[in-house]
Image (tube, rainbow, N blue to C red; front, side, top):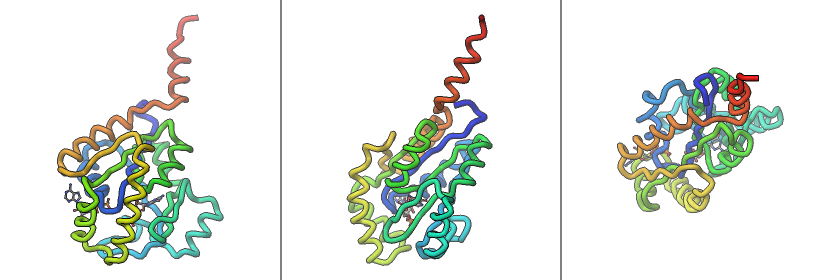
Length: 207
Ligand code: ADP
Ligand code: 5GP
């Protein structure tokens, strides 16, 4: 990729794996980027702000956006809808930014199918299931029922690591952040089919 065109970095992993924490650690160091703010029907958590963490909407509003073809991808996760709006992603890519998605395994599959040649995907996992449970309980943002559902979901998500370019085991935060920093920088350099064609065309400058 050259510096004028955008690229996509997908982050997936069980809720509580540390995706937001890791992203906060590296966001200042990886150049021009845009974190895609998803739309969701999940209830807002304490400490979250509408329009910053998510666009929080009703199920009716979400279904209207599906009908209007507003989403690059959307999925039903943990009993709620989550979706990525196309427009801001297109604008950010045009501006040459690294677009970062925090989306689930279903979302990654759609994005990779649609935009695979500019996408790098990373699965972030806690070291063990018991550590995941501990982190979700310590975070204190979800009820025990919601935590139990997320744990069950995590067991399924982990089976799909092979669909990703990279796996980061988030045990030591500093080590995991370093790894993600390298990957994010490399994601910017991924070259798309169009760019290769353009390069070869310009490179053949002798008749
Ligand atoms: P996610 O965005 O994947 O749902 P969070 O970033 O909210 O996960 O992290 C879940 C919890 O785990 C938070 O309380 C966070 O402080 C903690 N956490 C994140 N990374 C680590 C780590 N490497 N070691 C210990 N705790 C961590
Ligand atoms: P949480 O409710 O913990 O914020 O997120 C729950 C799950 O939904 C996480 O696995 C997160 O990656 C996923 N998610 C968040 N936004 C989107 C989205 O726009 N699309 C998809 N497919 N998944 C999302």
